[in-house]
Amino acid sequence: MNNHFIVIAEAGDFIGEQKLIAQHLCGEMRDNQWYMADGTVWDVIVTGVGAINVIHTLRDLPRDAKIINIGYAGSANYAIGSAACVIEVRLNHPCVTYPEPKLRLQKMPMDYLKNPESCLQSVCYSNTDFVLQSDYTDCVFDMELAYIAALGFENLYSIKIVSDNLSLHTYREVAAGVNQA
Image (cartoon, rainbow, N blue to C red):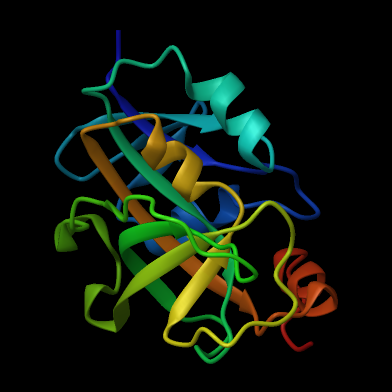
């Protein structure tokens, strides 16, 4: 059984993240598998959006699996189109504070990326809904990564592509392939 997985939330042609794999990772897609230059074959898994979909889809994967999560994310201040290599993930709950771990991710191997020099090192905050405003800067917001990390995968990497500056409308346009919002 293959132990290498690329995890995305949506694969659809209209709004989806599968296109990000070819835009940002080295290699090529063949038969719904990603082939890296080193010969490693990665199965592509589509979880669906949000915590329940992530947990339901990934709960039976071995914890020693190598996983790359790639997807769209919002940011209060990173430019649209920026790539953020996530080094730590937390839940976003701006109205309350309580003790919880900050989950560290493996550093993305630079030879996996087409443009490693342009990848920002960033924290990601996962939320249960689309983030429309935040005082947090120099970070990205998604709806899946903290739940993937909380499942305990030992070899988890993530790259998030900024689709919007906390605007659902802009996200929909960018994710659908519109060049200008």
